[in-house]
Amino acid sequence: MAIFISCLGLLGLVMFTTGQRAKEIGIRKVLGASVTGIVRLISADFLKLVFVAILLASPLAWWMMNWWLDDYAYRISLNLWMFVWAGALAILITICTISFQALRAALANPATSLKTE
Image (cartoon, rainbow, N blue to C red):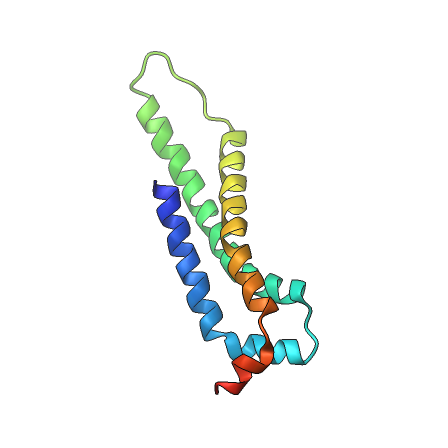
C-alpha cells in the first residue's frame, strides 16, 4: 500500500513538472529533439532523486535492521545484495511510473503547447 501511494505521489509530481515545462518541451521538439531525448530529460531529474534517496536510506536501514535483529537469538546477516535488489526495484518502479507521463509529454503536439502562451 505504501509503494502504491508513493507511486501516486511520484506520478503527480511528474504531471506537475511536465505541465510546468510544456513550453520548454514544445520548443525542444520544434528544434528537433527526439522523443528519447525528451523522455531522458524528464526522467533524469526524478532518477537522480531516487538515487539520492537510496544512498541515504540504505545505510540507515542497515543500521536499524542490525539494531533490531540484535535482540533475537536466531538472526540472519544482512548482505549487500539485499539492498542492491531493493534499490534496483525502487528504480524499476520509478521508471515504470515516470514512463507513461514522459512519453505522453514527448509525443504531444508542440503547436498546442506553444500556442497557449
